[in-house]
Image (cartoon, rainbow, N blue to C red; front, side, top):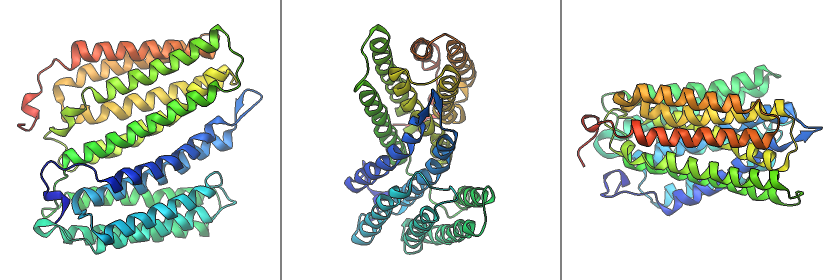
Length: 375
């Protein structure tokens, strides 16, 4: 029986295993932002971070879209998922060349994974005629794989444009298919749980980055302050992210789940950037100009990725969301003009604590009951 119809549905053990494999790959990708020469980030590696992150996230997102509506947790689904994981582990060996001119293997492994996903959709069965939408999505994924493979016919930067264009095509097509009259609505609680699980595992990557940054450093008041501040930031991120998460499970407006799913690529990118930022602050190995870029982009991506979903589904919160985010990003920007990275990290953490306080004091108390499903 399809998990879609199960009462009190939760992520399966296979989905949790699936997440761990993908976060391991994301950890390799995040390491691109650790490359520093004479206090400056390596520009080529920094560019590879989003170029590799987005395709890996889209593999995870497509599998999640399939599992949300069509997972029966049977042998075919398990074997296909394990095959994707094996391909993903192997593809991780090419991360670092990724979409650069030197490697076509990254693209071929990505295409192979897309073909497996297309097969999963094409053979799916779902309640209330959902198989027709699944087959349409399977053809879209197969066409997207063909477009991605065609990127190898071009040189940079057209190769990267065509490859990422295949992802954009699939993302738009998935929304259009889901708007059809026969499309199944998203299983909201399952999607919220899946997104939350990936986010908290990726937050764990930030803890790993913090711990790694503490090894071999010359301990002093500033390095100790940076370590404590980095951990406080991670605690604040966890608190503000999950404390209002239950509202998303009951939100009426995001029937197909794409606003929540797609906005989270920004949040996950932000968490990856912040993981490296905290490590650089602890090691004090980056010039302020590059550290400023990392800190501002990481915090802005996190705030945007977290708030877009709430902004969409809860109109009474919108003014507070805009004001709160603007104030906290402004505090982050101002803090990066302090003379040291450790001070800048403290300022950004202060902004996040103010964000949390404002959220609990003025945003969450506003009544959004009419925008929620009855519990």
